[in-house]
Length: 237
Image (cartoon, rainbow, N blue to C red):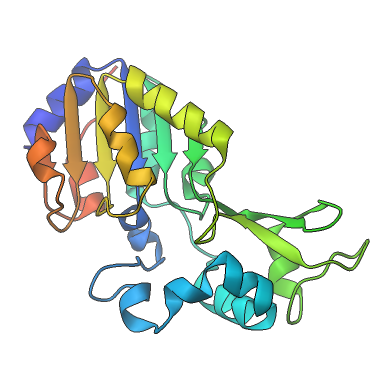
């Protein structure tokens, strides 16, 4: 399957990488739904990441968010870097469910962040922007230093809708791609997982440690460590 994926990359002109939490585990950020993931080991994790919980219990929300969702020292791993380098030779886009900003840190230019980013935060009243360090350094609930209102991470919480512009951009590049490579996601989070259905190119590949319900629809299926897999691939001009 590695050879088949290599050939697909070599032959494609437009490539989209659709990444999930498994893309960043090698960077020290835990995933969500594996046996060691965040949702398996923390009771009520999904509830605590909901819009309702943020609105009614901001202190508890931020206590959880700061300790479990922020990894300021995380750095891009080999898989992030491979994708970024590939854009020197191919038309490469990234559609990601991740909120860590590591694709951009590695150098990827055309990135659609379906669930937002922890690097962006804004005042819920005056919409002033605040970076990640402001959130980390704030005691308790971060407040705007202009108007005093609560600051919200630019992250799509449960019960919130995805950004329409991001959706449209992601669907456009997926529908135009020759090759779609799904990386490190179990494809169970909707509506993001449903984006795969818009692909009509030559090869649909999935690289994930565990089997997914979408495997039977893929041309290339690799059940292995993501970084290990990318290290077996070459970038050819």
